[in-house]
Length: 502
RNA sequence: GGUCUGGUGGCCGAGUGGCUAGGCAGAGCUCUGCAAAAGCUCCCACAGCGGUUCGAAUCCGCUCUAGACCUCCA
Image 1 (cartoon, rainbow, N blue to C red):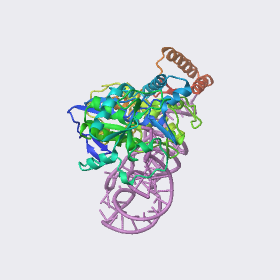
Image 2: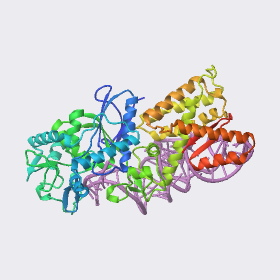
Image 3: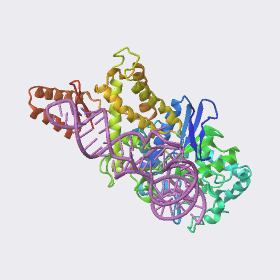
C-alpha cells in the first residue's frame, strides 16, 4: 500500500516517490503579512499541516518550508502600482517592518490556535534579497530576462519557445497557451517597459516615495511578484524537491512563473508533485479580498462578524476543513459550522470514552461478537488506505463516526464489554490516538481547572443528595442552571455523574 | 473569448459502473423521577434529456446552471 497524490502538473493521481529515500522536501506558499488572515487562508495551512503530519506518520523525515511574504507583492488597482506593505504602513503610521511584524505575529497566533505544526524553516522575503538578486542575475545571463528602466522582466516568449522544445512550455501547470490569453484592456503600470504582455517582473524599480527598497545592480528597487519562492525553495530544498503546495488560485500566474524562473536557473522543473487545495466559498463564491466577503480568523473565533451567529472554536474550523476533501470546494455557512461543532463534540467524547475504557478486564482474546470485531478492524485498517489515496480525511472521519456507537455502546453497556477482543480494543485505542491527535491534529483545550472541577463535583454531590431525598426541585435547579452556564451533566449508566463543558 | 472544475436527500459533505459513506437537523423507541447523554430504528438523494451497458450518481453526448483562473488573492 503506497501513497498516491494528485499531481496538478499531470492532472492525475500518481504514486508518491521521494527523491531521496526516507526524506521529503515540501514547499508551501505562505502568507503575505500585509493584513490579517481570514478563513480562506486557513484552508491551505491546515491542509498542508495534515499532509505534513501524515508524511511524518509514514516515517519520512520532512523539511517543510513555508515562506513569509513581507516584501510586498504588488497591488495594481487600476492605474497605480503600489507596494501594499509600504502604503498601508503610511495609513497606519507604522514602520513597514513594524506592520509586517504585527501581522506575522497574528498569523503565528492563528496557526497556533489551529494546532498547526510550525514549518521546519519559515524564511522571509526581506531576508533573502541577496538570493533573489543572484537568481535574477543568472536569468539575465542566460538570456531569459531583460532590463528596462531599472526594472527586470522575464522574457516569457523566449522561454516558451526554447523550453517547449524540451517539453516544458510556459503554462504547463495551469494548462494555458500564451497565445490564447485574453487581451486585457486594463492599463497596467509601466506596461510599455515590457516587450510582451505576458512578461512578468523579476525586479521593480522603486519610485521615490517607496519605503521598502534595496540596492541592486539595476538601481534601487524591490523584488518582483514570484522570485522569492524560487529563490528560497532552491536555497533550502535544492534544485528539485518533492512537493510544492498552495491554493489553487496560485496556479496561475504565481506557480507558473516560479516554474519558469527555477527551470532557467536549475535546468529542471522545481517540484515533482504540485498539490493544490481548493477554495472555501461563501454563498457559492470564493472567499477573497476581491469579493469583499472575507471573515477574518479573529472574527471567527470571537463571533464578531455580521455573517456569524456565534463564535467558532479553532478546532471546529479545523474539523470542518477535515470533513471535506482538500481538492473540493468547501461551502461556509453558520449551519455547516454548527453541524461541524456538534459532530466534533460527539467524536471527541467518544474518543475520550475510548481512552478511559479499562483495558484487559477480561483475558479473552476471542471476541464474543466476531462480526463486530471484524468490522472494527476493517474500519481501522481503512484509515491508512483512505489517507494513502490523496489524503482523504473525509473518508477517515466517516469511519471514525462509524466507530462512535460501538465505543459508546461498550462504555454504556449497551454492548457487552467482551464483544471485541482485547487486542482489537488496544488497536482501536492506538490507531485512534495516532489519527485523532497526531495526524488530524485535533486537540482538546479542555478546561483542566482543579477549582472548577472541585466546584462542579460539589454541585454534583449536592444534587445526588437531593435526588436521594427525592427533592427533584433542587436537583433540577442545579442541572438546569448549569446547562445555562454551558455545563451539561450526564447521568451515567453506572450511577456516576459526568459533565461536559461547552 | 480561452483554460478548468462543479451541480448529490432540509443543510454540509464522501463516493468514478453493481455491495447504494458520514455528520447535522427531523421522527419513533429503549434507558431515566423527568430530562440530557448514550444506544436502536426510520428518513434510500444524485440538475435535465438522450446514449453506452445485463446494470450508471459514477462512462459518452447535448442542454441548463454555478463557480475558479486568465489581474493582487489561500
